[in-house]
Every structure is written in structure tokens, then in C-alpha cells.
Length: 274
Image 1 (tube, rainbow, N blue to C red):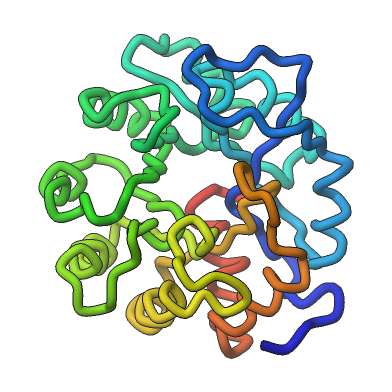
Image 2 (spheres, one colour; image 1 turned 45 degrees about the vertical axis):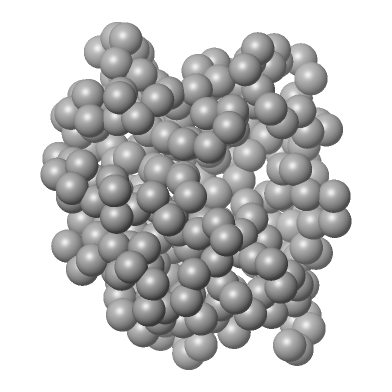
């Protein structure tokens, strides 16, 4: 894989999945990850190196239902930031209104250890946030998708699935779980984040050869339903990929300039309202 020089992405490119950590904010008692502090100034270096303009700040599991840390970070980016936060069925309408006004456009469900809101809440929350033009952002082991397919297909709001489906262990393109993901995409109401292949890959960097075929199939199937993200600062990773590896991988995955423009600029504008 070729190493790239700085600023490989088109003007207006968006990183749709980043987190911030700050010891001044209290971690959830249920948190399983306690990363070192990661501030806006730290991310700015990666943002500048890759030539990224817009960001989507995503509430990490570390802080449970307290979105304060991410909201503070969002504010530093101004109108170039949108947010995906964690809410549940007890969240008030006033709070949903407040979050919407701050730029939040999605409710996160993390269905792996450390997640704050269970499956039983997903449909109820989807009904609530649909009225605010939010989507549901879902992270799960993609091998569960066939069992969850009917519920996810019936959601009243758009669905965004993290990390190429995060199939653990990885599946091939003919697997029934991947077919379920493709069917959700075919519905027209589901987007997939092309991000964090290291979360499921058994082969590893730089090519992630057991995840990249899934990316290639998805991009060929529906480039208008794909999003890209760095997953900075790569929580839980001892040896996170450097910026040039992320850039080279994204360039390889997205191919021609028209596809890069679609995935990196146009699709985030549609999903997050930039």
C-alpha cells in the first residue's frame, strides 16, 4: 500500500466518528474503557494532516449517558461539527431539543460491553428521536444482524451502522450476516461507516485483508450509502494506525475521485445536515 503525503481528501471532507476524553469529566461506573485524555488540539493535528474540514463527535462508552465532554469538544469546532450522543427513553423532550440545537443528529447504541442503553430501548428511542430528524447509530457484532434484521428494518428513522458492520470474527462476502447488512443498505434507509477495520480484523494492518473485501463490496453496491471515519483516538488500541495509513487505506477503498467526493463530502452532508 502506498504511503500518502498530507491532505489526500477533497475539500469539505468529513470524519464521521471521533471521540474526546478528558479527566475532568466523570467516567460511568459501567465503563470498560478509560483512555488517556484526547483533546481537540490533539485531533487538530490529524485533521490538518489529512485535510479534513468537518467532524462528527460521537459519545464514547466511557461517559455513559453524560454527554458533557463531547458537547464541550463539539463547541470548539463551531458549525463544522455535528454530534451523535447517548440518550434513552427517559430523556426529556426539552433535552432532545437542546441537543438538536447544539448540532446533535443521532442517538448512539453500543451493543457491546460498556454500552449504556440496552436493545429493549432502541425502538422506543428511535420513535422519539425521529421527531427531531435524528438517526440511530448502531455498533454491534455484525453476526447478530440476521437476528435483529426485522427490528432494524422497521425503524422509523435512518440507521447508521459502525465499523463495516464489525463482524467478529470477520465473515466473507457470501456470509448470511453480510447479506443482512447489504439488505439493510438496499432499503435506502441505512448507511455504513467504513472505519476501524482493526476492531474485527484478524489479519491486521496495513491492508486488513479480511475486512477490505467487505468494504469493496459495499462501495460497489451503494457508494451513496457509505461514510468514512478515522475512529480517532482509536480507544483501546495499543498501537493505533498513523494518519498516513488511514489515508492510504481510505484512498484504496474509495478509488476514484467521484467516489471520494460522494463518501467523504456529499453523504455526510446528507446524513448530518452540514
